[in-house]
Image 1 (cartoon, protein in one colour):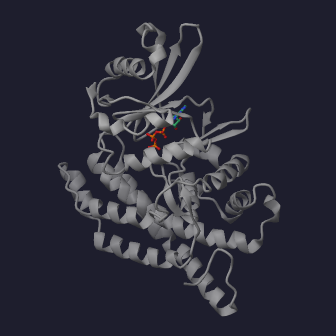
Image 2: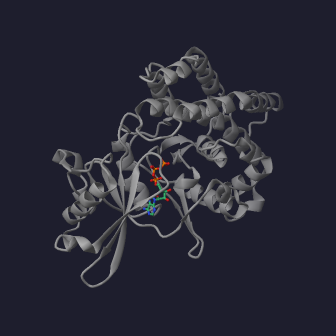
Image 3: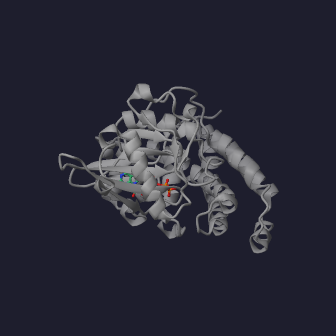
Length: 380
Ligand SMILES: Nc1ncnc2c1ncn2[C@@H]1O[C@H](COP(=O)(O)OP(=O)(O)OP(=O)(O)O)[C@@H](O)[C@H]1O
């Protein structure tokens, strides 16, 4: 365990967020990590500082592909069992994830009652309360009952106010990822050869075209989660509670992007896009998103507007995660076929591009002809 510079944790004491300068190398073997985690807990939680090490049970939570998630169960002196979740940031993730932005988001989103209670921050990770709920799978997420709950919670999430710039981040992030992803070099010759088959000039043109069309949709800017895959949704059905967790990519963004990105995740990591929601399934989601209390009263034109937005921005989601995957292919120590993931997302982008770019074009043209500008779509 190393001690990071104290300044990294400054500023959180005033929020009742515990802080520790300790860092733990996530590449260490798990038994070593567990020892360091106990040390960290004792360092952060003063009530636990004198407990014997045997009072701590540290277990790995499976699920994430970026970070290491651990559950710590603590037997306190009064025989009360307390559980917390500790997230160790994955190695080399700082070039992909803006950790300061994530901490800022976590502070406000957690205060607004979403996700777990944020308890502390340390050199390379965060501590949260342990959520007692089921993590969804892609097939759970597609169930109409769960989709309605997620839509309703997402609508609330989109109303969170975060201080600072409200500029949507989508194109800034895509630009940043493009710059990094287009100049990679792989030591592995096989990987390098596969990488060289990608035409970045073409990817660039696609980005320019996509931005040009989606900009004209004037999709409302909201505080967006930006990574609403099944593993980031936890539901406790008995208590009827929905938790949207993991704010690594959260930022102000287009509502259509957050929803389109969520729909793209119906396909799971296997990218089986036969599961991408059809128009009826999407409308079901939109009804509960737009009017959670009166879902059957949503106006047809509002459903159509959101349909055009979500599917056009789902294309942007393919580009975003395709570029992300290339950077991960180079930097991540995790054993996942990130290069393969690039091709799956980019292939789906190309397969759907004509259909989902034609929609906004016709929609905008239709608005022009009818002189009828629908609520969410204005010509600019
Ligand atoms: N506070 C918590 N309480 C209980 N379980 C949790 C908590 N936070 C995360 N988990 C579990 O750990 C899993 C991984 O968490 P998380 O999504 O934060 O990791 P990640 O590495 O960022 O994942 P990914 O990169 O795939 O989004 C979640 O799917 C959930 O099952």
